[in-house]
Length: 180
Image 1 (tube, rainbow, N blue to C red):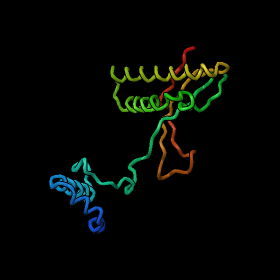
Image 2 (cartoon, helix red, strand yellow):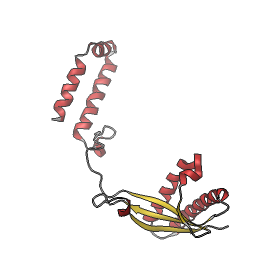
Image 3 (cartoon, rainbow, N blue to C red):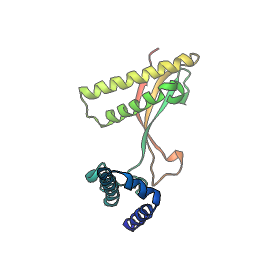
Image 4 (cartoon, rainbow, N blue to C red):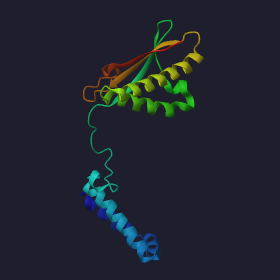
């Protein structure tokens, strides 16, 4: 079925005079290259075995359901007054937010997947150092009630049993004491 649609699309494009006059204006090697490229792209789409045909892969990005439940890391703080609040990294770090959030996520994922050893301890030290730097940025703006503890939560959204935000599973991943 999909092959028939592509064939119809190619025939439709092929009968357009501007397309054909442009194709005829090209020298033969360029014409052969362009036709071959289009055919390989279509073949990659039809075969749909991305690891075998890369970089000519299928485009069915949203055609299959995601495997597993989405996971992310959430941050909360405990302030000096004892209040627990959401830590909004984007609001605190401003223009650094993208340069900070993705490395934090990558470090947390690496810590979770790496067995105990000196390499894991080095990553944990870097991760906690980054979190403490974030705490210093926060405390400069909130000197009246500075943060004392950063809690990092590993959150899982159960796709099949999702019943709203309360169904998100949260496990404490890391707790970092902030030095004053």
